[in-house]
Length: 354
Ligand code: ATP
Image 1 (tube, rainbow, N blue to C red):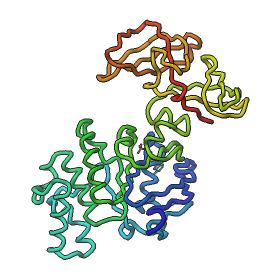
Image 2 (image 1 turned 135 degrees about the vertical axis):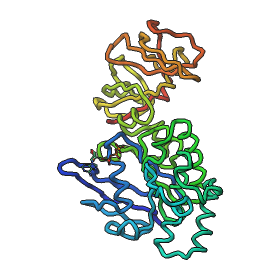
Image 3 (image 1 turned 45 degrees about the horizontal axis):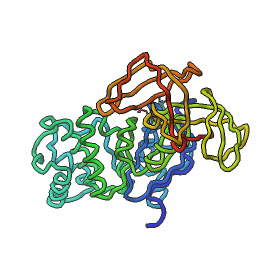
Image 4 (image 1 turned 90 degrees about the vertical axis):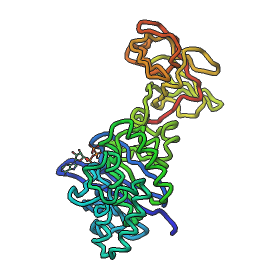
């Protein structure tokens, strides 16, 4: 097959007067792990429901394997969905739960059993065939739900907050398992979450959503290191934002007159243009390592020990409206009330036009 596996064209959908999706355009490549990341209400579930055929969009089209599936009902499109609450049948055994979709498709008993056993083994539940869902742990139930969706060999697996019901430790463990499973089976996964760490851990392609629109999309490393918008810079990880006007210094150097003074960086830009600079917490240092930009003195107002590092909040002496978010090594002695001098390597300043 050439071209994208899934192509979403100009999708818009409103509930009453509320625009839940606003001109969404997105391609999903075969074999990829796509994560839809965004805050509550950003439209992730609405988009997934349209992909699964549970909701017909008011505008736009969905193509899967080049075929227009916009009006195809869920059972007849090459998708399967894993819901957050798993939606397992409590009275059926694990084997019958997993085999349900195959039975609906008229697959005979012996072939069905073989497929079910193979898929249960793939998710590490070879011994659970005869158990009932209530005899399993949360993580195991989650794997049954995955097996049930994968057994019908969908072209695209849709996962709506699949790890949302698990505690944090199990959640991180299941992330590793999910990623490994996806690479093993090679099916394209589209996974909805509001957890940015989960998105970074899983995605080949990360789609950041806000208010029904796509703010940014790309490999998570790029989205983190060069976010396209202020929203992305603060939602996908934390950032300190500075705003100001560009002054051209020539030789591909500009100075931005920010709230905490002029900041010179290597970039080109229109003089007088309003820009935002984003700085990641791990890029701010308390020592000057040239070539770096001096951000001035700041008073530490909060110190939180987080194991491998300390997270500080420090209010700028030059402008009390600016609070720097800083990560320092956990052995660095620093306390609330200290005055620190802050620096950032010029190359790590992220320049954004909005
Ligand atoms: P969450 O992470 O909370 O599930 P989400 O990003 O998945 O959020 P959606 O569930 O897609 O967001 O909802 C997008 C917007 O559409 C929200 O403002 C929501 O209130 C609204 N909405 C969703 N479904 C309906 C519905 N059936 N009727 C009315 N409004 C809806």
